[in-house]
Every structure is written in C-alpha cells, then in structure tokens.
Length: 460
View: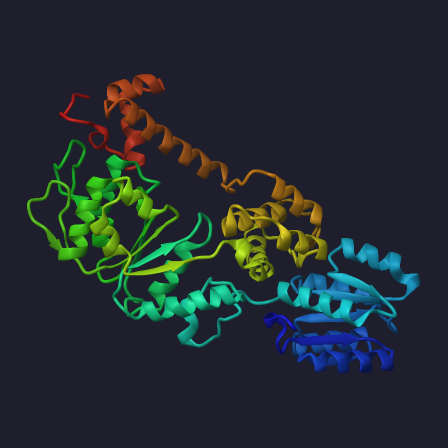
C-alpha cells in the first residue's frame, strides 16, 4: 500500500529510452502518481520551472546534458527536490559519487520495480509538506505544526477537535517529549477562544517560591522587592486558554488556590485583599501518575476531578513509527533554515536508522538528533553515520553560548537564594560579588529575595 504522503504526487521522469519512459509511466500511474515524461535534461528543467514535481527520476546518460549535470543544477536551485538516478553498470561509480553529493539514491538497470517503488515512497516522504492532514482551508489551521499520518494520532486529534469546541478542562497525559504543549496549542486554535491569548507555564520548571507570584501576580508592597504591582499568568490568559504543563509538580498550597480559580472564576494576587474575575479555559498536562500521587497525598483529589473532565493520552514515538519520516523531514526543514544549509534530506540508510531507533526521549529526542545531524553534515544528504552518532550521544538541547550563559546565571541565582533563604548578603558573599552587582543580576532575571524566605522578614 502506497504511503499517504505519496498520494497524487507529481513525478518527473527523464530518459531518452522510450520503452523505459513508457514502462515507468505505466507503473507509477497505476500507483496513483501524476507522471510527466521528458526525453532530455533541458526538457526536464523546463517542466520543473513550469510545474515543479515532488521527485525527479533521471537516467545518467542523456543526449547533450547528462543526468549528473542536471542534478547539479537542481541542487543549486531546488535543494529540497529529491533526485533518483537510473544507471547502467558502467556508470555506477558516477552514481556513487553523486550520492555523496546529495542525490537521494540510484538504481541500476534493469531495476526491480518493488525496489524502485520503495525508494520513491521514501523520497516522497522526505519531500512531504509538514502535517499531511493539513490543508490550506481555514478550517484546518488548528493543525499548524502537527505532523502525522498514523492512525493513532488521527484518532487522538479527532477527539481533540471534538473537545476543543467545549469549555471542558482537558488533562493531556503522555511521557516527556511526546508533544503535550503542541497538542494543547492545537486545541486552543480549534476552540472558540482561538482569538484570545494562549499562556503556557511549566509548573516543574519554576521554583516554588516564584510559582505563586508567576501564576497569581502580586500587588505593590506584597513583599520586599515588590515595588510595583504585577499581573500573573492567569490574568494574562483572560479570555483565552491557560496551559499548565507538569501540573503534577504543583505544590499542594497552590493547588488549593488553583481550585478556587476553577470553582469561582476569580483570582487573588499575592498580598491583595480582593479577588479579580477571570475567564480562562484550563488545559493541563502531566507525565506523572496523578492517581498514585493522590494516594500518597501529593495531589488533591478535588482538583484532579476538576482537571480531568476529559483525558487525552499522547502515544510514545515508538507507538507511531510511521510518523517518524514525516517528523524528521519537518524538523530538517526547520533546522536547515536555521543554519542556512541547503540540505535535501536523509540518505536511505539514515532514514532507516531513524525509523528503527528506540526513542526513549520521544519527539523531543528526534528533534535533537535531527538538529545535531544537520549541524554537523557537510553534504546535502545527511549520512547514516551522523544519525547514528547523534543517537548514541546524550540528549542535549542546542543553545547559543549567550542563551546557555543566561540559563546558568538564572539557575545559579535561584539556587543561591534558596540556599541562603533569600539573604542577599550571604548569597553575594558566596558568589564573591558585591551586593550592588548582585542586586543588578537579580533585577535582570526578575528575581526578588523575599520570595525565597521562610518565616519572618529577614534583613538584607
């Protein structure tokens, strides 16, 4: 059965042998492809300019300009267009050399039709547009960034589209890296609140002393350092959707305040004496077993039932393997644009390595592997050696030096303030910085010492 990605795809065949052209045209049309035949490289290039194909299949030996010259021009003008070369025995060395320069693959004549069709399917998957199920209709814009062709994902998205129309709270379950925020954003776009804000916060990534202020905001003078009032993320989501990722990591004290927001539709900032009305739709996500957390007293049962009105579970990447070629191609387009590299795709054995890997880190790990392979490749077609090297390497988020330095500084300051219970004099002494400089750093990262203190005001 032909992959969904290939349905109706346009293929250009270039060969001066009439019998080969006729045979290939018949076989490919029987598979549902739209086929354009050409007898020379120049005629093929004219077709590419007028009606661009998704794939070019060309003989190496052509009258006048040969297939290798044709490939070089296509690589310079359309680097993402895959090319398969047909070769006679005497031109195999040329084909092997071309493969190292970016040709998707080559087949020797006479070729096995099943091998050819399998190679065509692989090439078309790599040239597929992101998100096969998407169309240009406004009705499908909610799927922006969602890339899939598997039945598992199709069924999940059908449920997500249905629940999006309601105001029901949705709990998205799934292992880390499966794309829970991507699904939450899709639900928001498909909802009546699509024109409102979508605010996401990771409850496990923000220190507990800061999380309350981040969520609920604070009034002026609520604590030392609160020189001005500040709205929280719940207020920022008013009229739209609030997405709380890793809700299972939320402290019990804040669970009580969140429950009040859901029950009464009001929020009270830290230090405020009155509550403010809010209108938000809540989506939450977790990789934790919340039922076990409830049994251990770490998660409130009444909040759980408020959050879990509808439950959607994202499959692991190894449970939707047919999506891996599409996801890989989608990520490759994004990363190649980021690095400014004319990369056309993955070599067939590299694609096979991606499709058969175990993926404990799920979609996030796949993106990291694609990014590392793209950053290191020196050829338009990423070889299997780079993919296998990236698969063996520990998962590492690619950050610029400046981004990594900023992240380290903020985490370092948070750890120091937690260690010293918010005492700036002690923290600056440990950091070997004067207090004025230390305060500047705190201001840079919007940190206030009072948020890290236990009982009592404490002197700084």
